[in-house]
Image (cartoon, rainbow, N blue to C red; front, side, top):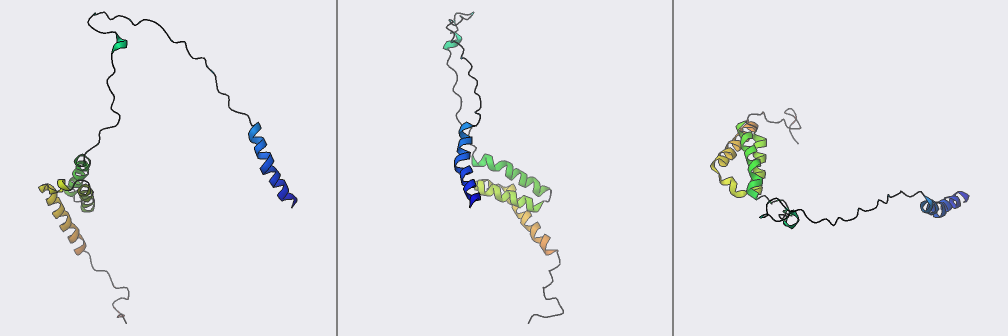
Length: 143
């Protein structure tokens, strides 16, 4: 009981007291420089306005947005390159990602040929492997 009372005292009195009395970080108060009231200099040529009168060019507020075709093109190009290297799984994966972003780009004849070659290669890749053994084995037929 005494331990619980001591813990309650520390939590409800000690912690708030420590928080109020802890050392605070010092913030430097530097004086602000006085504003200058100098007249703008006249340019060497009288046809140019003073530098202070030139209006700055507006800055774009957001980066330009890429179109779906611009986003899909590097992905599709990488997929076509992977097909040339016979990396069929990666090829088909990237072509699928590009198709989801830009379906119209998938109509390109080179892309259609890559799709066809990739599908055929993946089909043959699995056809050449021996079939898996049944879990019960050839000795014991299923019941």
